[in-house]
Amino acid sequence: MKDAIGNLQRILVLGGTSEIALATVLKLAEPRQGVHVTLAGRPGERRAAAASALHAEGLQVTEVDCDVRERNSYEQAIASAFDADGDVDVVIVAFGVLGDQERAWQDLDAALELAEVNYVAAVGCGVLVAQRLRAQGHGAIVALSSVAGERPRRSNFVYGSTKAGMDAFYAGLGDAVAADGVQVLVVRPGFVKSRMTTGLSPAPLSQVPEQVAEVVVDGLRQGRRTVWAPPPLRFVMSALRHLPAPVFRRLPG
Image (tube, rainbow, N blue to C red; front, top):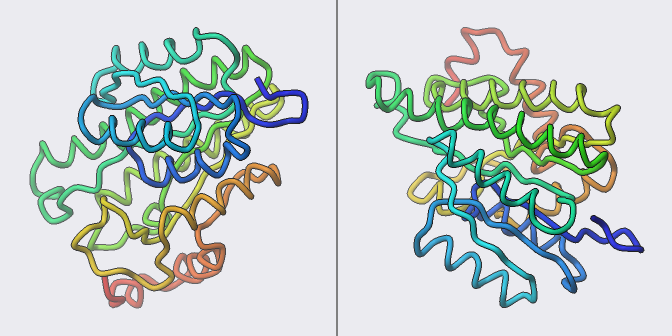
């Protein structure tokens, strides 16, 4: 529940080691006093390091085991966060896998892993979180999508297809829950220089997680339903969506 002057008190991160999510938490949690963060993710050094980093910034942190490949696991993680003391103000849906794109369209296991994590689990978590926030009568969901879902390219069409589905679900969810006092913000970043993209060549308009976090927080405060990071990508993607297919296919990957 927000405090008397409107500051957030409780944040749940599904995908507790996401660099974008952690940067967003720090931006949302200003000032730090009294803010509690639940990091839901697989146990290990990365989650422990994320928790330590937030502790160092003055936040209260709870770590919850969550493997989104297992329905029971994310159901229990969400229940644990919402059944603790106080309402949850913001839920950040931040998990996802990029995968090997050439392998993904030729290997069944690789393709299904992308679909199950990026789309199926994202839908499952969205349904459960929306139920809880509607019962509260307030709160926000931040869904980390990708511009890759707006018009998937040959180089990443399996990943892009999963993000397209996830994006459409959360956009529709936002329409469905708006009357219940719940905001859903779909975030469409371009290339983000992070652990997930290590080894890949940065694309134009690349950003770092902290820059994406600024866009997310501004979007929440303005009551937006969709944001692009950086904002000019909105116009770039609008142009790309309307390119004829033969021209689009000739663009560099």
